[in-house]
Length: 115
Image (tube, rainbow, N blue to C red; front, side):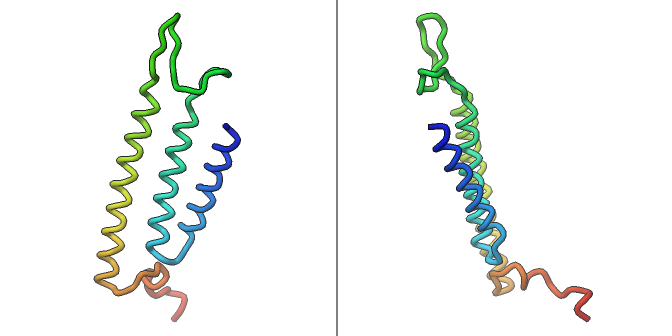
């Protein structure tokens, strides 16, 4: 299971990097959103449980308690990722409305070396 999770995280980081290196602003926002999903999976994979335990339980004698730390971290990361994605989408929309361009190369402006 850990190898599958590792491959999924690696694939998400690869796709996120590919999208961020794009010219289109919407693809950049989608790439950042994919990075947040990869980060959530990394946080979830940080929980180390026993060899025979597959659920996130902490054993204390004969009683079992749920470990709430990973759940709280992932929930916070989801909220922050959603807020950041919404902000970036509004920023891209406003940039498109003002400049009528959605490519980052055009928004960069003229270089001093081109003259």
